[in-house]
Structures are given as C-alpha cells and as structure tokens.
Image (cartoon, rainbow, N blue to C red; front, side, top):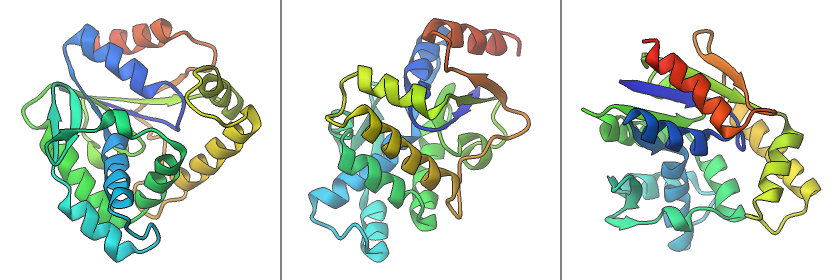
Length: 211
C-alpha cells in the first residue's frame, strides 16, 4: 500500500504522517528530507549553491538509505542536521532543478519498494506516486503555519519573518517547472488550520480503513 500526502510547508504533514505510520503499521518516508540531504552535502562540501552542474553532481553522489525509519546519507543518519534556514531555502531551490528531482524521485521509489509506505512532500501524488492507493492534500493559511512554527521555537526568526519565509517557499514550490505543488482531483482535501493533530489523523485513518 502507498499513501501519498502533498501540501505546502507547515501544514503538519510530517507529524501526521509519522502518527499514521504507527497507527496503521506503515513505513514513513519524508521526501523533503532527501532534497535537504542534497543541500546539506553540497553546502558541507563548500559547493556553489547557484551552480546547477555542481548541484547535480552532488545529487548523483548521494547514497540514500532508510535506517531505523530515519534518512541516512552515505551511511550516516543525518535527519537531525537538516533543519535550519539555509538548508530550508537551498533545498527548495535545488528541488526546482529537473535533474535533481529525477534523481531524488528514483531514490524515493527505490526506498518504497516492497513496503507499505506513507510518504509526504510536494509532488508525491502527482509525480512520484500518481497511482498511490490513497492521496491526500493538506492545507492551512500562511498565518496559521507561521504561528505554528513560531510557537515551536525552531527558528530565531520573528513571526513576520516566518510569514515572509513561508510565502517565498510557497511561491517557489508552486512555480517549479517540474514537480510543482498541485492539488489533484482524486486527493482527499484536508484543511488543518483549525484541526488538532488527532483530528486530522482520524480523518486519514478512516480513509485508509475504507479501502
């Protein structure tokens, strides 16, 4: 079984997907972490973040694997190193490069082979797994998403700066030449703005049990 979830940054995709994975015995994969890993390796190696040829070479060199439910890059678990402002913006820009998306998508499909998977990202329902057993699109207002990030104290940015950052990220994600964030007709739409995590999880589980 493949459960695919798309939606903009900050709608709760990761948290909810992790909870659903535990409830329904699915294997959780965060597609965004793969792009973040490319950005992490490129920046770590002092690569030029504007040189597409160098970026593609970095992506090709990445050896992705999932160890104990966490993303490993070249054999090292790195998920805890992938969340800062520089990687946020760099990975978003890198993911607009078609060759990088093709490399990552191949890695995502490989990771999902022979597994019951729940995967979330920006183009999972449209490009990576268009034939997924279940598709969901999570949404929430920019204000709500910025407030959530602000309350989580994961950033040193002000609330207004978070709103601006999320808006820029949304624009980048929705205007990619390939793999842009879109809502497909057969995806279940859930606005998470005023729902608790448990309420969203219940809606997803109900759909999974209805298969």
